[in-house]
Amino acid sequence: MGDRTSRKLARLLGANRNAAVMPDLGETVDFLRRRACVAEANLRWETSRESRKPARPEVRSQWGEDTLLWDLFGQQQTGFFIEAGAFDGYQFSTTYLFECVGWSGLLVEPLPDRAAQCRQHRPGSRVVEAALTRPGSPNMTTLTIVEDAEMLSFLELTATHELRLAGEASPVMTRPLQVETATLDDLLRGHEGQIDFITLDVEGNELAALEGFDVERWQPR
View 1 (cartoon, rainbow, N blue to C red):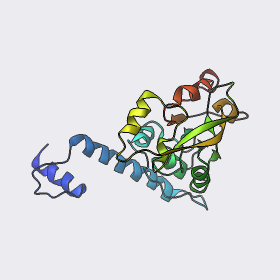
View 2 (view 1 turned 90 degrees about the vertical axis):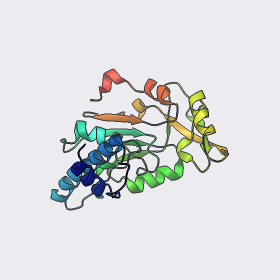
View 3 (view 1 turned 180 degrees about the vertical axis):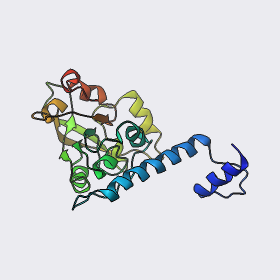
């Protein structure tokens, strides 16, 4: 990378042009991809003729999943997504960006308070308060809520998730909560049309969620 390019990137990133150490190249590329993604989404939002526009587009995912999905589906004016483990529909959401430009979808979140917030943040999508599970499971189950880190709440404690909890800065406090369960097939009953993509972030319960989803029937793109 030439000195001139380095200075331009430093100014773009808000870095000191005289700094001896430039930002990591991977982080720089990720930053620029996010900027480009948001710019494209906002251009579509600003030129939309809808009388009641959704919220202005934002990239909200934790690890850039929405920018990757934008690379795949960003040219599509409308579409349908599923996001399980949607939390409040905003923090670390992989689908928020798409709803802002006219898409709709199914959002699944078992935490009652977060599901209520999700309905407020995501008026263009259907929000279901439930935990995804496999066929034949009871209608209710115990969700272990992780206090002060609700995104880490879980149904079954896997070895991987136990290590993740052990890495928290402060001791983990938990409490049980009875929540309703459902399979994705149950929630999609009556759905017509293409499913473009699905994101699952259910803290180790992904396999059970997939067992309740007929991939051959739905064939998500």
